[in-house]
Picture 1 (cartoon, rainbow, N blue to C red):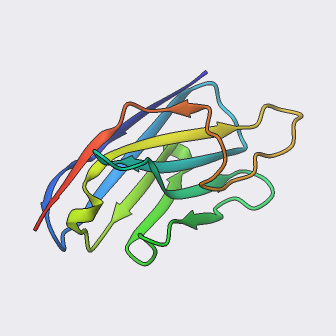
Picture 2: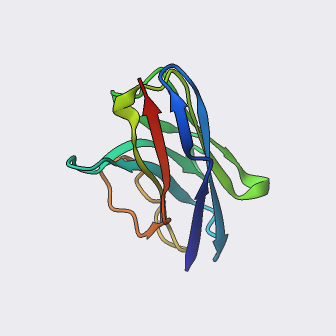
Length: 132
């Protein structure tokens, strides 16, 4: 089992920045795809960014077109934490942001990392509100 806890959400004005954190605990998997998703009222859940951690290409990142150039996903393996740096925030970025993980048990192939794949573990979410 993997537990995910998000933090760092809040209220900012348009053009501002926030950094979200996702701390993972529980079972340790050396190969995993970590993703950030968001869900705004009246809209479908949207994949924002993902990062692959582990062999063979650790650090590969994937972004939704709506956030490319503004958001950056990164990892700190020592802290078992994934971050989402959000710059140039817009009111349309207002949503609940969720961290998610897709893991590969030892001996199985590495998980395909993309925003379209299923994720087996989810956090409780952190609210981001951007005012105009």
